[in-house]
Image (tube, rainbow, N blue to C red; front, top):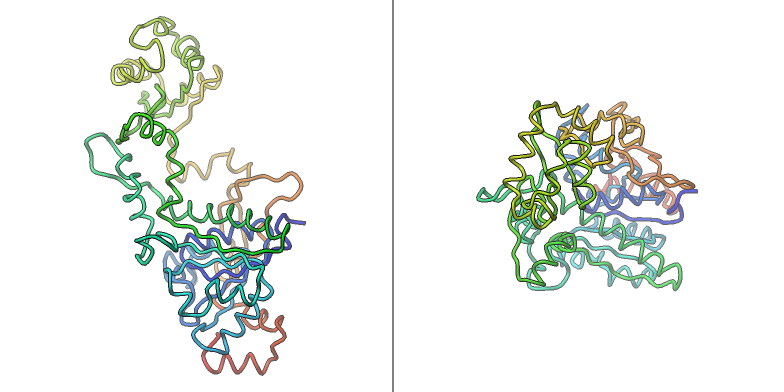
Length: 395
């Protein structure tokens, strides 16, 4: 039995944050029914690249779900949705605040139908506050929260991260919040609304930066390839490329000097005596270390670091990362058979359960693939299904 096998989820979200959340719930066993708008479905279906007319972007983030296409603006289709909501534990949506009320699928409405419903709303700025009505996107959140002011090199232009970190972060925040609400429901039978804002989910991640700001008023800026607190904890240039080196404490620094660099005199150097000293003289430290690192290739330094127990690693491109034998053995790259895409490579589930491992039980659905199947489970007859389809309310 999978961890969330008893959980039933209605996913009325699209693009990334909400679908990522429901994908994770589905990987852990939840039954996820994805409600897509009848005129084209999830907008990510129109995002390439495509194989045989199917979006691989959609396929990556919508596995373990069934697709039901409904025009929720029509009373007949809306009633079908209400029947699904009566049986559901969780609803996940990422409309702009106010839209679900107009569609009559908001928490207040569904709570009357199902008092135990857990209704997770993911939006740019949350359901309250002066910005609640604004559209919110990952890139805007990166700028608003200060993240872009800390990313890149000192004196350079503000830079975004390489991935949509806040969209994924909002999805992850929604997952653990839903699980907490689900435990409460199992104990009390009571549902609730969970309000997740993309522009807020990343703020609690700035732990070191918040500590310095609240204690000393220090505003963090970009540090490039260096760490804000520890040194040397950064990228360093070797003879044939760069590696990442992590000396997060004094003992690791000493092992680096003695066993890796074979330069024990650096330990007693007053410029590098403590982590604070090394941080204050980080540019000098970097120059001296790179003079030494220039004598060997990255692979040689990594081997020496491994032997000495000094954390270090290569700077891979994405292809190199996905081909790394460690990730392959840990099943972080898996293959799934899709009816149109064929054998599709996907990213695996990052947590390994000893008794209830996550599973990919089904590929991402075709648009509206399970509409008739799911509606039949509600007790609707073939004639009812045909009527909805004939009226353009389903596909």
